[in-house]
Image 1: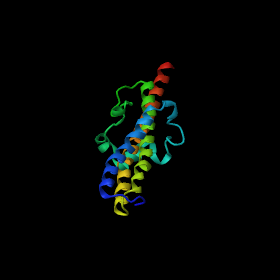
Image 2 (image 1 turned 90 degrees about the horizontal axis):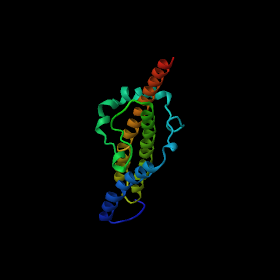
Image 3 (image 1 turned 180 degrees about the horizontal axis):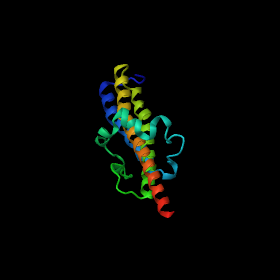
Image 4 (image 1 turned 60 degrees about the horizontal axis):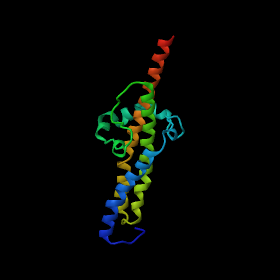
Length: 167
């Protein structure tokens, strides 16, 4: 604990600051233009080791649990990503961009939640809060990346179909 505060204040701070650390970054990122989120950029692009998202399916069984996670974007006026509702290229392209937006929000939430380490007692609370920050965000990051890679494959397939029809 870097800041000495009474236990009651610790509880109040945790109950207010931690949810704010989830909502504020997400709300701000939801308001940012889509031009800032390019799936091909260094941060969001597919890595070879991800095997087109198949790594997440094979080793993390993401398809078994991804539907259990909430889609918070609609709560904040953002793009719903719970399910695919179209197959046109514009929609899929937008969906891919929105997975970048969601991934970034969850990456930012991890250090934001860790701010609570300032007033919580060490080491037990630090372990619990760090675990919480990781457990509440990493599965969401995995789902965003997995979904984006699957959408990229779908886009490639649809573009190939369009190209064949035009030939």
